[in-house]
Image (cartoon, rainbow, N blue to C red; front, side, top):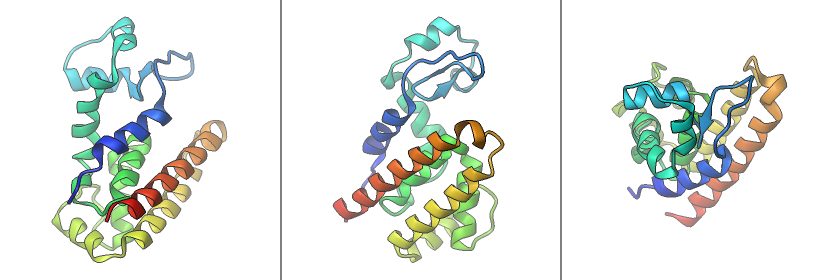
Length: 171
């Protein structure tokens, strides 16, 4: 199966933005928070080091901590990119659990051969639509929805459109 990681990452970076150090939020660059980056590199990181991070620096983190953990290379085209964005925005466990509920396998938050097989047996367009609906419902229940909800729903709408395009472009 063709990997869409590169184009999916590019679309993610369009949503995530650059360096941010807002008082009510984590220090973030290219969508990676300071605690996430420190855990990934295994040592404390200064705000200045966070500011200097490049897209090339954080791409391997996105690959290993989100794309690979969601087994996106084994997902149908379009579903892979959507699941990836869901995991980045809401956490790997949440994204994988929602997907597993949709495909009717045990919802343990870890993608394995049963989840992959269940996803492969479904129509990829139907699976993408059900994942989009479930993500919408998931986001509406997040405690910070009143503050960030409009932006989150806008994000998933844009990502959903991209994934439909991806499904139609790559067979």
